[in-house]
Length: 451
Image (cartoon, rainbow, N blue to C red; front, side):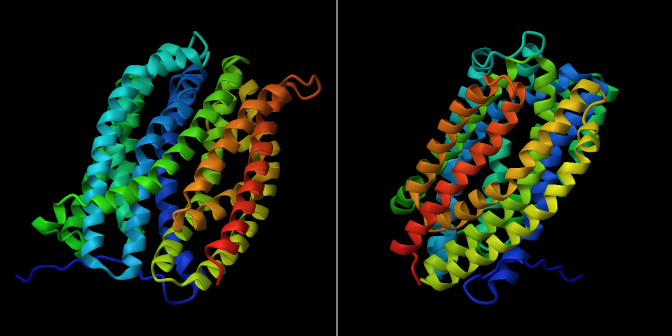
């Protein structure tokens, strides 16, 4: 019997139509990211429907904190992915392999270190965030469960970032879809059948991430020529590590600053009680879905620009950015009426509490006015990350921290705005961050990536 050969898929993005390349790369990644968001959505929906509004609030209250821990770990992994894509663009196969192995060393150390610290600090941080007394116990359980599985989350993010750097956005999708289906089944089993509450939801997510990461990496080792590693490929390469850290640390800073700013916003939300927390959870989970087309197109642009930057094709980077902005604007216009007229039905998916539904529905109509600014953030982030612009990461992170520190407190104090200042502050933050990001792109276009 002849052996079945499974072909790996890499994509050279230094040649061909930019729009077609960006969409071909982004669509599988978008599907994968949507399925990844299903992890959190399924947790929220099953917990909210079968355990109650307080349990939904408990899961939601951990979102910004877990994002902080994951951001600290995965920022360096993303830096390694950018280095790998740039080396792929130069055509240096040996250094691409060394980048794959050296990024693994970075990710392993960070996952163990951050995961351990996160587990220990979970409860004190939630207390510092003024988490409501009636949900803090469940919030701590859920967060610590996720922190214990941080190494599995990092395993999948490492494997997928390396493959995407090589232009393969399809392989991570296949295994993520499978693990998402497993997560859904385990959620129902643990939460509904075994009545394990929020711990069951967290455990289901951890097991599913382990399956996604191990299967994706195993398949890459079996099929992808760049993962066919020899003994010399495992030698630590100081130059690659330094470059990955140089790009990755600002990315970690950027993501962690965004996470801290979200924690500040969450603290304001917590002060309005568990109904507001539940509504904020429902709107945040919905907006995580809205983020995905922007995020995947931006990530596609990062790989596209990374490869073309390595190949010194600056003209293609600028053209790719223009095409991505057009695609982003079209999506933003489509989503505006969807949220304006369908928000009530969307929030009802998460919970059947009338007060939560009413508040969450109005909140979604507020933030939908600002989607185009959210898109600008991701498009500029895509091209600037692709060229390894460390300064942008710092500026973007600091901007979001300042906005989320000032505007929620300021706007909620205005009598005729009140609690709705929570969601107006989200939109205003997107607007200001998008404007500053675009200014940084114009500067980089003039000084670094001019055609």
